[in-house]
Image (tube, rainbow, N blue to C red; front, side, top):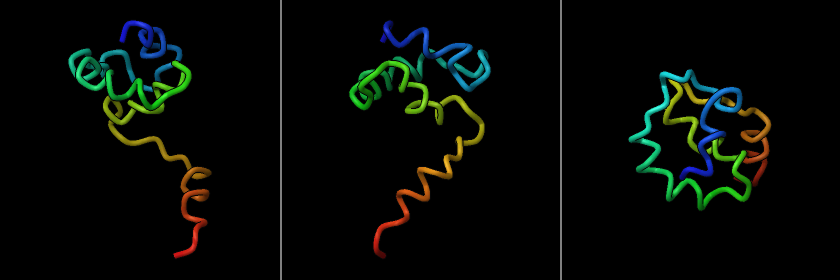
Length: 69
């Protein structure tokens, strides 16, 4: 949990500093950390918790939707 700390604040985090909720982070951290291979990826995995709107990644969406229906 502490190792991810630098990645959860500016300049790495896409959310405003006041949007970060330490209680939410503490609850989700054990699960979120199993989903990343490098700590810098943590912000992409938890940004939905601290942003008003989700980050839209058009390239990822297109890649995911290319499969056969």
